[in-house]
Amino acid sequence: MKLLIVDDEKDVQFLFQQKFRKEIKSGKVQMRFALNGASALNLLETIEDRKDFCVLTDINMPEMSGTELLKEIKILYPYLKVIMITAYGDEQNIKIAKQNGAEDYFTKPLQFALLKSKLNQLESA
Image 1 (tube, rainbow, N blue to C red):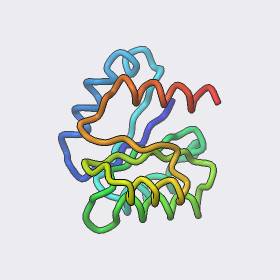
Image 2: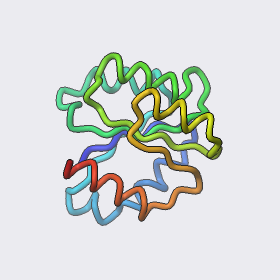
Image 3: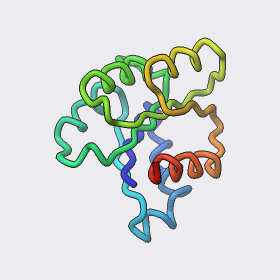
Image 4: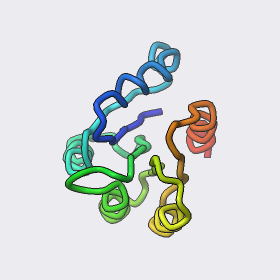
């Protein structure tokens, strides 16, 4: 599985690399990272096999929110699966994310076992 993780907090990259250490080492998971929505869109544009990616994006980011990124991805690459991640689990954000095509919604601190389970479901679907 190929993941694009979008979060403006730089330490998120290290966290994901640690939590998916075994999967990365075995080659089961590949990761790319972007610090904001605009960078994520630019990166997706350069990736030839982008159809194989799942995007995990924070909602609250400067320049372009995760919700705005989700909307753009669904216009440009409607086949991409997007999972929203946020520190705020309020019903309004969840509703907006689902209405705009998000596969799922996770709150911080992430429960990586649940996230991995969801990613496995998406991969086998």
